[in-house]
Image 1 (cartoon, rainbow, N blue to C red):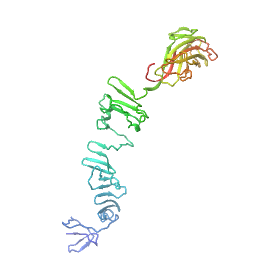
Image 2 (image 1 turned 180 degrees about the horizontal axis):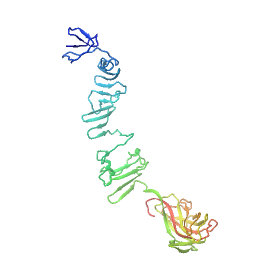
Image 3 (image 1 turned 180 degrees about the vertical axis):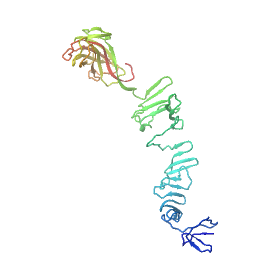
Image 4 (image 1 turned 135 degrees about the vertical axis):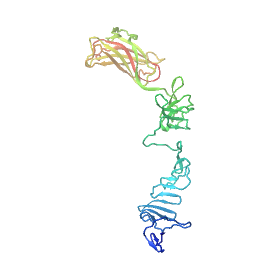
Length: 426
């Protein structure tokens, strides 16, 4: 039988059968310490030679009162205090032996920040920053507190079919990939009270439009000035019978596009010297071949004109058979017009003269069709255009030096082209 002896003068040893201490050697068997007795080790309190070691430089030692260190390879890596287990690194983690709550963490990633980490209560994990709960995880949900934003610096938030973010009290609004549709679709659900989806610049989202609760789901879009003028919005919805677009102020406009008013020359009125009316193929035209021949026609400035933009007078005409328009040859007309509003005199102001023309290129076709054009200046000082004005035109063939084409020109149609972008009649 051997007795384990740890004494002041030996690292470890045993006693022989005669009771004589033996330093060193080997020992096998169980070590039992009777009740009321303790195993006390002499202190060797440094990380290089821990008191209770396994290979000389790795083991346990007492750093100080109530402070047990763990040494690995001569270096202190962890230590225990009365209620903390912590890493030795300055920014290392710590684990506390204390009551965990939603605001008191027991797992601390940086030991110097004792109020930031993870805590919680039964079946609930709380993320805590500076003693405040910012996130909570339980078996059914991840809850972010009202002052916390979820930010994805990179990557995606991925939701399964028919799942997605839900806002408010759980039934206020939701968005998800909807597989109940025949053709699956991204779906946005509104609440059942306001029924409004509000789109504006982020900084303006708190601007109160004062919209009444809507009877049907409504998309409202504000301008970038809506924080100053809350009437600057457009709203779209379906009222169970018709689709509706409304505005708080202003008019409903669309991107500009070009359209035109057509005038059939058959409806035009001859001047003092009448141009001949001729039929060429399937077209009824006015044959214009002399400067004295005049043709009159009237058009309305359309209600869907965008305003503050020039128009174009365009004469659609054919050249005479057997006399193709030559290279650099010019066909030119003189055109006078007035723009008269309701209540104005028919001879108000000074008539404006413009010169629709076209220049031939190489190898023009015989009996070719041409668009003979001139710009109508919308804000000419003598005749400023306004929606619903009546434009009165008189045109004649200019056979002066600038008109070098010698043949007849058959005008079969006139049109006024303009930019349109708002709903209206014309």
